[in-house]
Structures are given as C-alpha cells and as structure tokens.
Length: 250
Image (cartoon, rainbow, N blue to C red; front, side):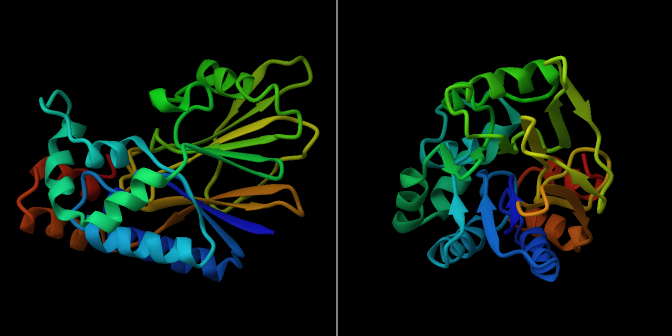
C-alpha cells in the first residue's frame, strides 16, 4: 500500500490541492490526514469541506491542536497561533465543528501509529524537535510491540528518526523525492512536514509517501501558488505576518 501522509494544512486550500494531486500522481492508494486543518490560513471552510469529503471516501483523519483551538478559542491571545482561532471558529459551521470534535488524537493502522504531535501524552501537543522528543514519543508505544512506525506532524519540518543497533535514536535529514528504506526490524518516527505552512525557508508544500510493501518512505516538496494563498490571507484581513510566512517559507 502507498500511503500519503499530509499534516498541518492550516486552511491553505491551494497547497492542499497541490499535494493531493501530486500524491495521486505518485500512485497513493490511501490518505492519512494528521491534523491542523485550520488556523493561520484564509480558507478554513473550503479546507474542511475537502477534508470531510476525503474522510467519507476512506481517508484516515486525526485532530491537531489548531483544530482544538478553533473549537474552543482562547479567551486571551497569548501566542501568534491564538490570533486566528476566534476568526476560524466564526467561519466554521456546526457540522464542521462536530466533525473536528469527533476526531481521535491517535489512530492505529497495522504497524503504524498516526499522531499529530507526540505519542507521549498526545493531548499535550508536545513538539518532536529532536532525538530526545522522538525517543519519548517512541517510548510511549513500547506496549504496542507491533507498532514499528510513528508518523506525525506539528513541527512543520521533515525529519526521520530511527533506532540504531545500540538502541540510540538517530536523526536523519531526508532529501526530497528520494526514497528512504525503513525496514520493519527497526523503530521509526517521521515528522512529515507541513502542507500549508512550511518553516524551513522553502515555500514549497510538504508531505510524505509511505510504501508499506517496499518499506520505503519518501518525503516530497510540491510547488503551488503560494502568492495566491498569501493574497487570500490579506483579503480576509488576517495578520500580514501569516501571508509573509507563506511567501518566505518561514
């Protein structure tokens, strides 16, 4: 099975459609949507309609922290991420909110665990920025011996971690479009990047494709019209900062 892993869409419809089209061209047979469908971007309604339609067609879907914030916007804005939560909440209809509220925080499929952030207390939305964070996430699935792969997002970067022969966790920086062997005799954790808001200085959208039969994981970067997505943010009257981020990939 070829599984397309998409996370952190952040109400960026243009990036989502580009990644879906690319994944189809790569022969993806199944979709996994790893949360943060809304927040920051200008098209939460259209993105939610698309996500809900994909779920009806069989996509695996889990919830992210920005989805939570859209359901229950913070009374006081403390972070830049909080600033669009109330606006997003007002855009979504009752059915879209109910869909988000019903989503699980994790999902087990065969040898995979899907989670938005860390498998260690997923409701706390801990970031897997380094080998220590990856080790904590993998330690949380030790009681699931059949799980060999933990796939997540949240950090808006593409990184792969694996357990070496000595038991130490190693970090691997993937090259876009190059398949990485991920044999099942090891434990693996991947952060698949952000579809809608990359933060590595490259505005191209991110997703990953897992080939379970070949035991290969390929991280992809996809061109899309980020200027159109940025213009939509400005038209919506959202903070200029979010438009600039799309144009700079930061």
